[in-house]
Image (cartoon, rainbow, N blue to C red; front, side):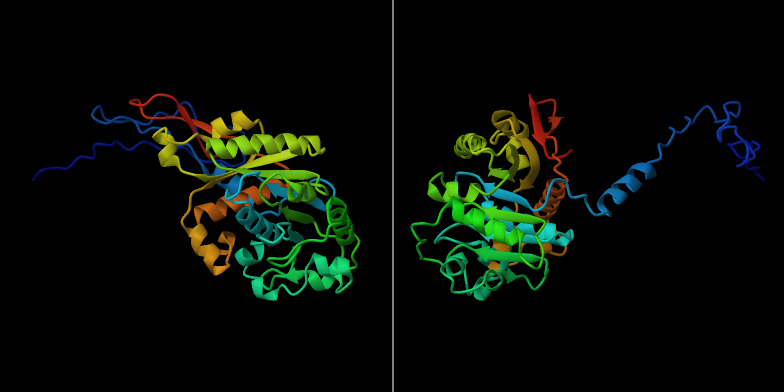
Length: 336
């Protein structure tokens, strides 16, 4: 009969003494490996990194700055995703436990109530409050899903504002929200209309920080650069940027500017990068924001991370990743 021999000679295992100060893996202990086999590569434990990430997202973010934080979401160019950003970031803040009041400052072309599914509950607007037809709390529409989120519309569709309505009226409205009996909200988010006309000036007047939404195309970047200058002239220095509708496949094919290129052109801190997602249209038609979807989409997760950074006044960095050897150049993707 053939005798089977163990190719791996047994060696005595080192004793483990938890009370000893010597290291667990002694340098004098050398296991024997046959010549035909190579010693296995040392395994790097990764449990510490995973634990830190879990702790990071299992805690409530620390609110930075004085409350209420008045944030205007603007872009200059229309159709880049200002209202979508307002709805998703606002509800993400509410889900994090902060009280939020979202103001739709687009006169006559309001859409924020549609994205939130609250269009049938808007009975009064700011115009009625200014005219004395209702109280401010009657014009506020509380979301049934998250009671700490409220919507306030400037006017009804196809209506015109009074001649005297302007930045001072919106400042009075923000002051009234600060001093109401229910308590001041943590965040007042203003959905700014497109363009740089009187509606834009009115929307940015009470704000002390801004979120600039742009897409990686030259027309949007030109308008974003112009709006950045106007915000700085108005005294708003805390300006962060969200790059929306990013497609990594087009970036790899050099058909779209990278996030790093956009950041270098505008010179703004990066709050978030939102990938192109077909679920945006579905959620808009249903009046159900992306951040409430289960399971969450990539765009919804990106909006939640942007809201987290907004709370702590943090920013992200565009990561440079080298392409395949056949292609040249560096391209930025979202990370950080």
